Image (cartoon, rainbow, N blue to C red; front, side, top):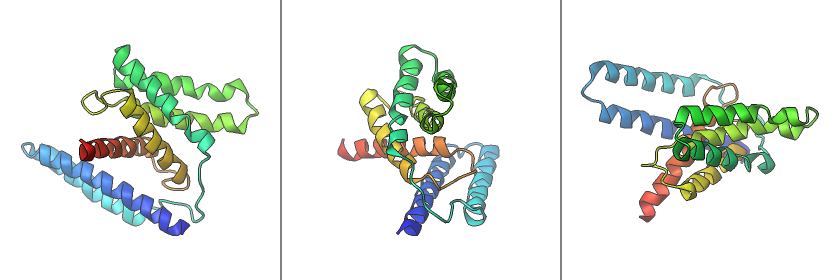
Length: 183
């Protein structure tokens, strides 16, 4: 069952990334240079998923006690981004910088050492535009889905850059899709 779950997560990530690239491809058919770049990204994505070791052989789960910090990073980042007007990059950077100091509160705590990635993952959710994420309810819902993805994907995509942003993207995309279906 855990092998099926690992491959299911990888297939889901692959599917979302390909859809994202195809959407960019569809929207930017007027620029040949950009089409070549997106096509190259598609080829590299196929190659990476085919050749790279994307998961450990033993499936591990992240603690839900760590994942509950995803909404904290998301709400704080969204607040700094839209209410304080810092912008998405600066807001996520501030949240990430603050989160990096959490382990210093108790250097012997193994739990506190695991929190910065979860908070920073949430910060990526808070970067969302108001046309997509139109309030804190959306952010909290996307945070919930992202936290679930974080819990089940601990041993997936280790050593691959962009895991936290990809998980946040999945949470936002799933929330937006559900609103689209229900609305």
